[in-house]
Picture 1 (cartoon, one colour):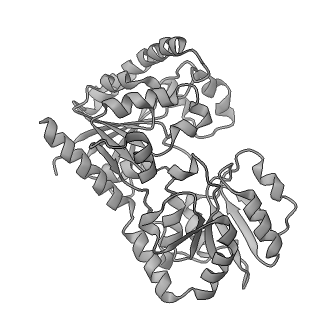
Picture 2 (tube, helix red, strand yellow; picture 1 turned 45 degrees about the horizontal axis):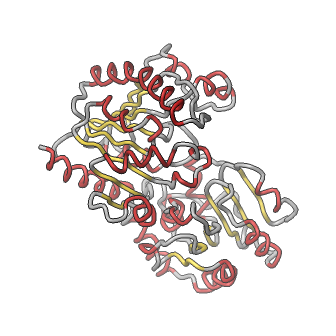
Picture 3 (tube, helix red, strand yellow; picture 1 turned 45 degrees about the vertical axis):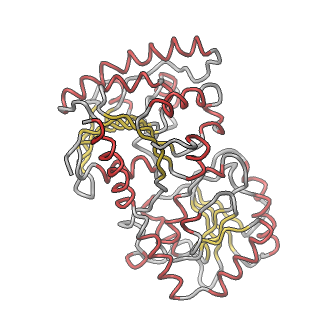
Length: 396
């Protein structure tokens, strides 16, 4: 495989306390390719106001006080460069497409110089450019990199995202119409965004098997001997069916319901009076395997709506890698996991959990782990690079 220069213009910030598919894929690709990760573009508002609350904003690199290029030696032996962009003018609040376009172009000028200098310093020429769910600067932003190949990577439904409600759909369509290759993380996303397009591909989310290894971790420090723990790992937000959790926790007062992850909004407060429901907040990523291993069953209790039907949850393979039963509401088509993930209507959720507890076996534990092994991030990155190779050859 020929070594390529690859630039990922990313919406997900490099730093943070939760796993992002873009970063996992880029880490694996960086083993064999020269990867520049162009980080999330923080606004002046982020720097002046939010940096006091968000410890992950690299203020010194963003402002240019410190080298904006951070070279990261990865645990898999790869080497990856992260470029912090200069602050941009906040513009997501603007309703007028015309005014938005003016500020968009001005912001792009602010970014262009630092991007060009970084590419020269790193010897990057005519790269493969992957725009990772970051259409906010318009398709014109791709041209800043002088690409040999353009790819749009879509892992969420921007149409259902409140933060992108003003211009997200319109700008994303530019990428879907003009990018040479399109990669989606779920079949539903591909159908909804690029139905009938020959250049549309699906690569579902994966799992980090170097961390999620059942045999190498100790039991959960949060678990209690002989107690049934129904566990969830991920963002605690409006995707969760709180009425479902309330009903189960009320009907099964002897079970403990553990929620691990950052809490968004106050949706969870409707469960505050239930003594067997606990919200632990975010935990270090390295602690999650042990916590999940302590679950009796891992759940994905999402409501069914336009947003969730496009999701392919990373937590599914993380649960499976730890060998535990997995029960999900039927919010989306998880066809490739149907053999090991029970996806059911909310009305059958409790009974399905009980069946999984009663019928769990060593053989089923092995089957779940085998499915997770086939969905490693390394395997997903291989699929990704095969698509890049295919389109790069066409352009030669």
